[in-house]
Image (cartoon, rainbow, N blue to C red):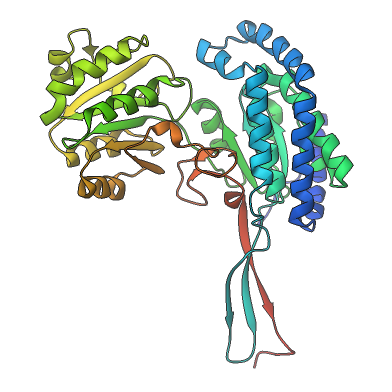
Length: 426
């Protein structure tokens, strides 16, 4: 593939130098055995734990500056660290270190009649360019999954979390150095200029994949400008469907958790669909439970008849990711009507059914076009840590190359290794 000549501006040269270091680090890291990479991650976790005071001081500076950046309350809440959240970051890095090494796994092996042995082997993607907004815990998660999968990563975090991320990355790079691993396998872009993102997105000769994680505007910009593949999800308009065969106490607990456990995240529920056969019994109770958490309800006519406090939903509400204390509700006539609603308005992120009917659960899981279908469980479980991936670099709503939470296996590809004994083709 032809590549445009590199720009000669100072910013472009700076970004290319970072990417060139990452490319060399990726080549070096790919040859380092999994146990050494895992040991480096354990050392990084220990450094983060030991640096908790410095990290919290850095984070306090970020939080103090948040109003000046125009952060919403939900965005500020995602930015804040405390000792418990730092320990959660450490636990995530340690969990990634404990995972089986995917690199070198033989996916298939066959032999040809001429004696050639053909192996399909899992290998790292190479260089990841990761663009994300105001979540310092993501800095550690992304660095961990990159190292564990043998990739180099260029981190371009939001300026809102610059101090926190810099402190975390400093510790990770020190751990890499102590372990004899290439420190440029993890680099934090030190340029606040938004144009730096565009410069990296031109470097398809050095960067193998771009991964944006943040608001829809950021993701659409990366998709529009990237010359390399992009792993993405635009929004998390997640649904809970309460079936006619649902345990209504379970349905209420799942709905409240999915919406309220943490509202400003992509796997929080934004829409509730209820089968008409249980709507009269279920909706008033769940509306009261949500109201106790300060959640505003908008709904269709059937919802408003049963929940007088509900406002009328607009056409836009069905497709909106609120990331806050608001939820849309609709009464549906059937399981298939719920599926059709989700497929029309959802974002292919996470959608849940609550039902005691295994046939309904199977039909829902098969027909809903979603990355993760939950059966009798909260949408909040669509998370790398909760699903046993240790941590994630993001949740993909794409269908190629990966879908759902992307951990270390999702950051690999494969190559064929063909071994012969002197065969030549006639």
